[in-house]
Length: 96
Image 1 (cartoon, rainbow, N blue to C red):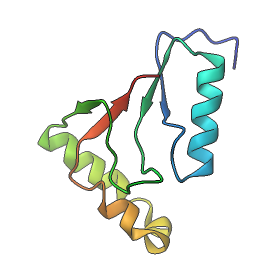
Image 2: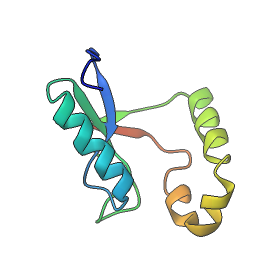
Image 3: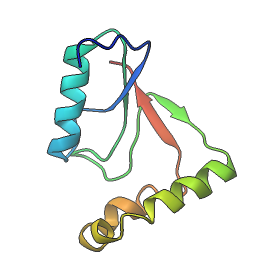
């Protein structure tokens, strides 16, 4: 991966309750520390993402996001609270 020289890298914030999210965030920061922009997922403190920069989606983007979330049927049965917390909500970015 180090061979790639992106101008921006979006990665999950490494303070999540999800080990895979944390790993991806840490690796992205290690490979491209000056390019990574973290996006929020659920954290140890809250299922509802928060962050430093709110990205307010349009109604069309909200509908597309909800449709994409609906594709995770098996995960929704296991952890529905994670999905309910982000339906119809803004996204958030965090500075590295």
